Length: 112
Length: 117
Image (cartoon, rainbow over all chains, first blue to last red):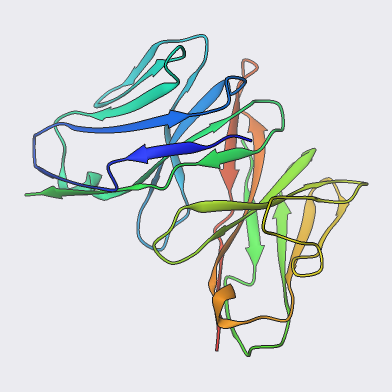
């Protein structure tokens, strides 16, 4: 089955700097790669996703890249702000009602 | 999109007892997923619930411990049976819903925070 690895487990950056979180997956059939942000005590919220037919996607300060050959995908947050502090999860799945497997999570601290 | 509600939002239970968590979706969905999130950990899939058939459990999870019902396309329950302190977690219901143009997104319920004493 699918296995998703995520690094780093903790990331601390200065406000205004960039943050990069990296994930790898094992199942070549996976075609959907969402990223979730989870604030303390709240449910995971989708912040951006990418599908296997796309190599890069950007939404304001957030971007995601996908390398299907290497089975790598990454989240890039630019101009970080204190409110970006949260736990971020990458995930992989096959769309169409298939299960989503999550990475272990990255706790991001943005220092003002 | 899909709006998901869960009951109860939290509970404190004694070991050896059972708790049933309800999940209600505002639209019909084929599959519903149950996840567990232990303190400070990631989300682990417990099982996938299809309407009209038995749930499919992931490795490490068994039906006797986590029986699931799926009586219709908008509702499911997860029971945590014979609880021990190790079952203290947040349990989340999830569905995959369309967001237009043939694309899908996974939606999560607010979670049920279970503490077993």
